[in-house]
Image 1 (cartoon, rainbow, N blue to C red):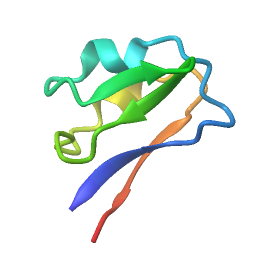
Image 2 (image 1 turned 90 degrees about the vertical axis):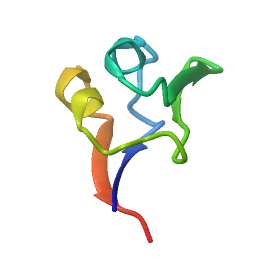
Image 3 (image 1 turned 120 degrees about the vertical axis):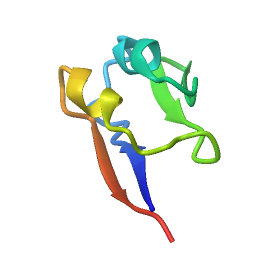
Length: 61
């Protein structure tokens, strides 16, 4: 199953990803995006709005 993953080294904490997540799976903690993998449905909305390309979809076992 595909899930979103954040590269916290390049995340700028803008919150754009959290605002487009249909399952409210993304929150900001200490100025960085954090994804709740139990809620993430792998839709890719977050990857499309991230200005630094800090989020990517990958296979989770």
